[in-house]
Length: 394
Image (cartoon, rainbow, N blue to C red; front, top):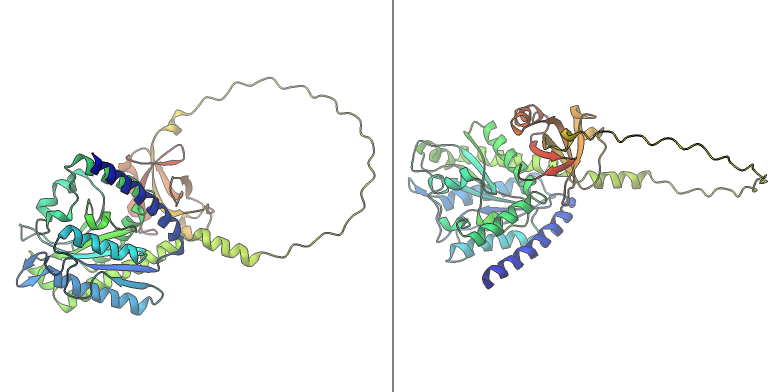
């Protein structure tokens, strides 16, 4: 009981830190942390004479070098740049990676891994974000069997599960949607180079749970598939994959600038347009003439209250295209072809203004409209709304 209470206290403290960091993220993406998964005593998957830890490191160093060369305003921090581990205990090793990211003040965490499966015919790329769903949880052992189970939080323990689920709930109002945006962009650029797109998966991963920033873990291919192993260990394959990741990073940074910083842009514009106040010359006071007393107006008869439209109080679904810390005009040029067509809804948390397109009675109908919206806003996703506010768990 005392252990659970201590964990809960630490969790409450983490929520306070997370909210504070979310408030500071209006400065944009300045620090990106790249984690080469596994290392040292923890080699990860092994196939065809290759160890996953080495492939991950090659990819991490190449991605970091590309960001440093083409985006000099961004600082790149590596959890490791050589063959090493941080502890002989895997849990402590994963926590050490998160600590490096947190201490560096990271704005984005990217962990690079390679996948494996008992079925050697399975192939493709996927990106994981912190979360939980029954499907992904049940497939942990089958899909990611090569990874040590200690990489996953033990959701069978009721105390741990309650804390983790509260953390996942909090993510919706801090980093969750930004992690999902980054994951979506990664998968989009993987698909653009012809990789089989396995999509985004929600998993209760320790390293993502412990990082106080938008975080993803990307699986670059299946080592258990001989064709994919050949590809991800080749110079051509790694260059293509790294370039796809770099393009996703660049697009994500632009997205953060355009969505999260809209309030900063507006402030800067107001400051540049501000003019010194001109003091008016004193004017002589006009002569005051006595006015006749006003006659009381007849009071209107009370009108019956209009009937409440209950349909507006039901849960509806819409497609979110942007979020901001302050209000933005729906006619802002950033909305492109949707200028004047978006609507604003509110939410709790740092980025409380959400801008959305469409109004649908069910999630399936809204999901059908997402593909069209993503032609202009690749990061768009469906949210539930009731009475003008975002609703969770719908």
